[in-house]
Image 1 (cartoon, rainbow, N blue to C red):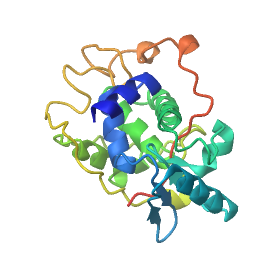
Image 2 (cartoon, rainbow, N blue to C red; image 1 turned 30 degrees about the vertical axis):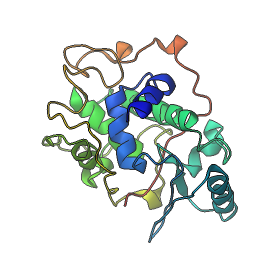
Image 3 (tube, one colour; image 1 turned 90 degrees about the horizontal axis):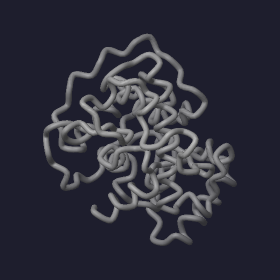
Length: 239
């Protein structure tokens, strides 16, 4: 886990490491090569090598399938927009940068209508489904929190559904079933989802992670952010 935390800090510095841990646990169970093929029924492919993973991804693209890949389960529908290819989607750092980009974009959008921890819940919903409320209803947000070994709060009542900006990457076929939580890791403290004393999920410690203006909700000003040109985000149906 320490290796993953170090990777997260380097490759996705705008998202608090504990937030990324909870999300990746839910998405891929920390398997950088896993592929989830969307549809009914969905299926999971666990390649044994990087070369095999690339081959499977190419084959699925040729078939026109909708699928999610890598640590953050980046959906194939977003690959072109974000410069992702079968050759780089399984790179742990590229994949985490993609997850960062999508989650940050979702959080910025959620902040227009939500405050406090509700903005993070809405952002997680957006990451999973492409809108700010479906991930609350289908159990995804609850699973992310519970999978982190946390007390699950009463989630805010979903407001009338608000569509996320185009970065919300879930395909229609990917909505609905919450993903199976990944294996629990050792981060078993029960204080708060995003660490004590509530460090901002998007990096800067302050009394409340999401109560402040969104302008400084990131580790660096937008003009100095880590390049994320090949970043993606997932659009998977949950298991």
